[in-house]
Image (cartoon, rainbow, N blue to C red):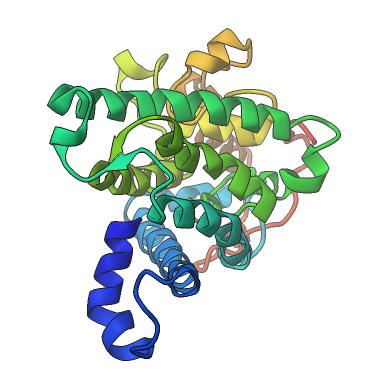
Length: 302
């Protein structure tokens, strides 16, 4: 994060914001700057990538689903934008520790213990490490003593849109994001690769909420895609993983996506339309759809 902070200092904070008496390496200045950069960056990534996914990838036909809530898109955005500033507070504490040199982030490939192969291995290990951690954190958040306090707000969106990707309770959002920030304190990681992975993580988080259930056949049993994660929202006890299905298989929580078996949200919509149970008011132009399920249409209640 010091790379981002250096750019922000050079082009904005130093010439336009802080007085000359505040040195760039001052702790208070760094904390304030990190809060600004983190909140701005999170909002830009969330709203920007979310909008691209919503307008160009998300299948708006899903808004006809009986579990799609009234004003859902606006509610997702409002919840996320309210939570992100709170999530940023403990996140900035970790970023500050990185900037002060307490992590194992490095600047040059030559600083990697294994050189270029080490760079590649760190990328792979980052994905597998964070996937493992998020699986167990996510499963912990589903414990009956924890779920209603922190994780239930995210499960309001049973048919999520890309904007549901960051619509978490602040505690939930920080806990599930923590593995990304903990990794560079445990393992060497190139600073540029860390930033690239940070962007990738946001893209992936949006992608598993984008309603695009297409998965290459050979990867269906390996990659945790949108079809897998939608079943998690609908059926609650399955597919906790982030990128891969590995830990769900090991933990006995894997469920083959219903959308890939002809039993998914689109199939239900077509069935209800054929039965005449979805009227013209079920899918309004602005995405405001019915707020309760049709009679006989169920999913697991939490």
